[in-house]
Image 1 (cartoon, rainbow, N blue to C red):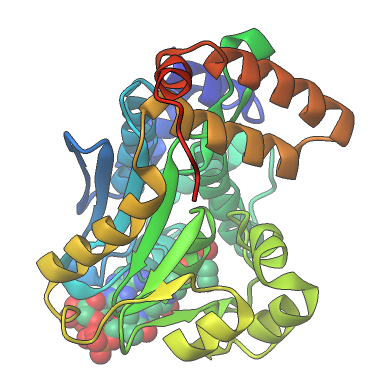
Image 2 (cartoon, rainbow, N blue to C red):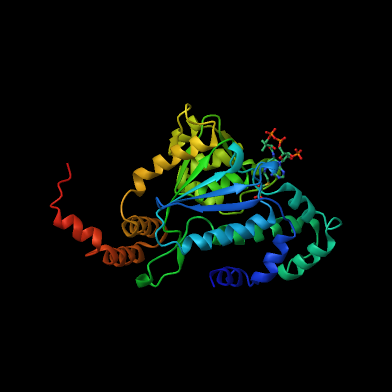
Length: 320
Ligand SMILES: CC[C@H](C(=O)O)C(=O)SCCNC(=O)CCNC(=O)[C@H](O)C(C)(C)COP(=O)(O)OP(=O)(O)OC[C@H]1O[C@@H](n2cnc3c(N)ncnc32)[C@H](O)[C@@H]1OP(=O)(O)O
């Protein structure tokens, strides 16, 4: 299965073992609603901790992404946080427990053994990060399966994805926003890579993606200054793709409606065509040119002569 592939492929970790370790830190949920419109909504739901990621939520995220991979009618994905705020990163209670072997000696011992690390406390924290990295990076919301004709491995979900940022996206939450194609910010919202204040750097792939989104100069400033990026600054540096209207924002339902309308501009049309668009753009961005060109030709072959193409030819469309 996909899950098995993910976990066994990643540094030799076994699925069951990793699941058990993460499940030792429960709380919250990752909720998925697939809609008729072809747009799914994924909600990071742990409001008592400002939607921080518990261990069990990591496991659920991977499961939801697998479900999205199997959703062939899907075109778009909105990732939001529950109760008007996005995500405050890792659950600090779990991080503290793992950083202190006296709180959870058995867990730490097993963890250290399986990861081949030594047992000093300073090595335990980054080790947790690498487990989270395995889960987030490989099952990040951009992970896609290219059409089988390409014979390629997973790159990203074949869905156009948006992070709907209300309230705060901090630490790992800021990293999660970068795993989406687009970011929409509500008035008053903040994206902040607080890693420096935690004595850290991003470890979930957030730095590498951030550089691609805003460029090296802006990424250095954002990480170096742990800058609070508001919607205006977000637009200015290209981190935000849009700002929600003040009149609609503030109520979760309205913000979501607005995000759906915004995303609908790009997902209107037949699913195979929208998914093909995502595939050619991701392969163009992520793969070496020669491979990307080959991929594009193959993806083209999946829509050429397809229903949408034939219908367009039959209607003698004018594009003005
Ligand atoms: C740096 C990367 C690293 C990784 O990759 O693993 C991380 O992501 S570490 C986590 C980084 N995030 C933080 O440090 C967030 C810390 N929290 C805050 O700054 C504030 O709580 C804030 C701004 C999110 C919200 O402030 P506000 O005043 O509106 O609410 P409270 O502070 O009263 O928060 C309510 C409640 O939520 C708990 N909380 C918030 N964030 C976390 C978290 N990341 N993990 C666990 N719990 C969290 C907070 O402690 C409060 O709980 P309570 O029991 O009511 O005291």
